[in-house]
Length: 211
Image (cartoon, rainbow, N blue to C red):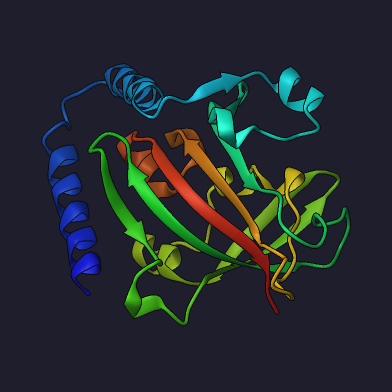
């Protein structure tokens, strides 16, 4: 409960921070966002790799080297911590339910902003329905912290970016592990609050198949 209270306090502080910067131009806000991402990459000792190298490595990132692939078209940086068990969501497959655990960090305020990894949500995941149509993923939240807090069923594009590269299965044995990614999401690929506030988020997310 204490962790949840701290998170809610952080969100209030963040909202106050952004309210004080209403006079900034969009260009100014984007510069701040870019600087925040760069500072985070430097602070965390992240090694950026190109999409070409990512492909050559078999669509993997070397966690021991703290590699993140940079997707130049979206500004997303992604590290695949675990590929996961099972298989990817197939093209034309009926809508798949995906369960996620996540921590969301606001990179402008350098703070944990939202999470379902707290005791109060111990029995619940964030759940969304997703469909793959020729490599284009569409999804909607069914329930969870993201949907409740941001008052939207829209799944951020940044959350969908890892789906072509990970397996969405269930942990059905002691040796199997669900997929996990770390991802830097600029405001253009984030939820509506990030988009409106022009701030980037860093996520640690696990993905597994639900019912």
